[in-house]
Each structure stands twice: as structure tokens, then as C-alpha cells.
Image (cartoon, rainbow, N blue to C red; front, top):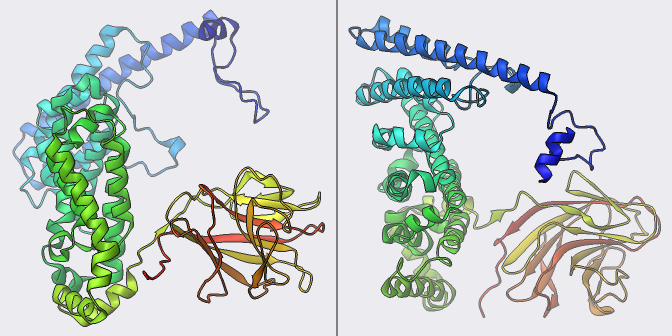
Length: 558
């Protein structure tokens, strides 16, 4: 009813109240304007049908000609021109369609069906062209252009077509990840990445249209992603030392983390669909995700064991797909297997290995795995067991008498005492971040750094029980009053490292790179936020939050 009233009255679909601007888009109820728009779409549909028919005829003719280098070049130019693959202008100048029915949705159904039929014939030609050129090492450029031509949005009926024409097995053969880059990228490597991107488009489309595509077709698409994940975790690292001879270890680890982490993020995105969740609960998927989390053999499962991000993402993916499963989908034995695997690994990393193996045994074990002390030293130096949190800073809606600049900079405004809380809610785990004192009155500092509950009932640093604070002027510590312990004072130009361990309930501070010292114990709160408090009435103090990470700092097991 609301939509109908909006159409009759000619009002916008969504009023942009926050921007205080008049929207130029929305319903148009003027019959003349509607008739003109429909006529334009009809003319566009006829022109598109005519153009697509010519493209199909040209592709058919060039494909039937004897194969030679000249015709191959002509075919490449034809694809480049017909699908706007040479357009390097800004986005608003791009003429490439996202979908072949875009902009002609109100054209007669008969014309739309004709467009769909001719596009399907073009798809079949392009897929056959890919299939015939899979083993041709000299036709990589033509295959790459074909992949680009196929990379568009897919509706449910489009997905059924490409599955029927066996595009998925072809992409499985062509897909690959560029994990250890050299100075020059070859056409084969570019083709591998482009094929993987097309596979991602197909997978995302299957998530959107899963119910209409059907479980069997969705499973075919998701199984292709399984092959890629298996390739990353096992095949790429079957011979670790050969890879390390070709590229520096730091670059290798960086690209490995990016590839595996990005792939798991993509899986978690498409796993929001219930049908895809059902496919991901199959035993082979559970086994490979558990291998990323709990495996200990570097020679078999790669360097993800030394990095935190892939393991966290694999755990999050399990957290997404397992809670909603039915008893008929996972047997009792499989459930028991998953629980035992996770708890055994938890016991191993927390208790058994640190206590039963001394430093010399650790060193000997690592040498046995990598067989090269030089690689071990650089490996430990280069690989960081931390996850950098990029979307962090100060929350404008959790500030009092403060201004936020670019998310990271907090400035004390007028109006008296103030404070600002971070965007990152900390409920469990170990967090570390740095606060840089950008501007302060030396000798009369009015800044406190720490953590806070939310909402804040009292922001007086001497009395508050909502905050745990470290004062710049004197180095004093405050929570429900001043504490006996006192740390170093700090001022403009200094930076303070803050470490909050929600598991051990401790809060530590370190000045200018020094080892953080425990300032508060028994920090009793279920959820905390980074906090900076300005207790002076004079405005102008400025701080910056940088390098927030989770999982970096660890206390020794006693």
C-alpha cells in the first residue's frame, strides 16, 4: 500500500532526510513520461537484438573458418569490440552491460525471449571456444578475452545453461591462485586468476538464486570451490623448499595469507544461504576446514599453522554452517569427531606442548620440519600471529565533547570534560592497540588512556567505575578511585601501547615501545571499548589510534 501511494503521488521511494537534499530519483506517474520511457526501452531492445544477432553471426563464421593466427587475432579483436573489453575510461563512461536484459525490462516479453535465445547461443559458442582451447598454449590471450566476455551477472536460468554446457569443469581446469608472484606475470597466471574470478561470480549468483537453481546444480558449483581450497592448502605446499628458493619468505607468507584468507572470507559470504550451508556440512568440507585449524604437519598442510587469520576464518565458517544443521544432515559420529578434534587441539596448544616440550625440543622439532635453521629464523621473524583490524577507530556516537577526524583521530572539543570510545567491542581474546599523543599541553597534560564500559554513567577520572584509565600528567591509574601503582608519565609525541586480555582479565600499558606492564587485574566486564578521556576543561588535545590487532600479545603460561 505504501508503494502504491508513493507511485500515485510521485514521491521518492526513500526520502533522504539525513542529507537534506531533494532526490531526483523515485516514482514518476506522468503518463507521457512513462510512455516515452517505455518506447525508449522498446527501441533499445530491438537495437540490442539486432546487434547481438550480428555478433552471433560473426562469431559463428569466424569459428567455422580454418584456424590460423590471422583469424585468431581477428577473433580477439571481435570479442574486444563487441563486449567493450578495451574500455579503460571511468566507470560512468563504461558501456559494458552487467546483464543482457538490463535497461529493457519493460520491452515486450517476446522481444526479451529473442534476446535471451541469441545470448544463450553466444554463451554456447564461447564455452565451446574455451573447451577447444584448454590445451592450446598459444591461445591464452583469446581464452582470457573469452573469460572476460562471460564475466557478467547471471540469473537462475543463465546458471542452468552454463552448467548444462559444462562450463564448471572447464573453469576447474583453468582456475588457479597467484600465490608466489615473480616480477613478470604470465598470461597463464592471468588466465588462472580471471577464471577464478568468474568462478566466484558463478558461486555468488548460485547463492542469490539457490532455490531456483536447485541443490544438485549448487553442489556442482560449490564442489569446484572445494577443489580450489584443497589446491591452496595441500598442492601448493607439497614442496615448500622449492617455493622458498623462488621467492622471499616474507612475500610468500603474505601472499599465502591473502589467498587463503580471502578465499575463506568468500566462502563465509556465500555460506549465508541455507542450501549452500547444507553442501558445506558434507564430511569432505568439514575435514578440510578442520585441517586448516588443527593440523600440525607443515609439509602436508602449509604455513597456515603459523598464522592466525586463516584459522580464525575457518572457525568462523564452522560457526556459520554448524549451529543450524539438522540431525539428519550430520551424524552423531561426525559431531563427536568435530568436538574431539577441536578440544584435542585446544589442549595441545594450551597445555601439552608448552609444558612437555622444552626449548631445545621445540627447536629440534622445528628443524626436523623445515630442515634449515636459516629458514626457521626468518620464518619466526616474518610471520606474525596477529590479525590487523582495519575497520577500527573512534565511534562518533560514543563521544562526549569530542570530534572525530577520519575515524582514527580524536580531538577534545569545547564544552568541558569529554571522552571518546573506539568502534571495536572487545568481548574475548587479546587486543593490542597504540594511542599516539598528537597534541597536548606539556607540563599540564589532561589526557587519560584506557578502556571503558558502554554506556558510560560517570566520566570523572577520579570516581568512575566504568573506566580503567592511565593518566598522562602523573602516570597514575584510576578505577573507582586512584590506585597505588603508578606508571611513567607521558606527553605530546609519546605513544602508549595498550594490551587488553579479556581471557585473563588484565590491562597493560607500555610507553614508546617498551614491554607493556600489567596495570589492572581482575578487569571485570563482559564487553569493553578502547577509551581516551580528556579531564581538563581546555579544548585542543588530540590523539590518534593506530595498529589495533587481536591475538598479538600473549602471557606466559605459569
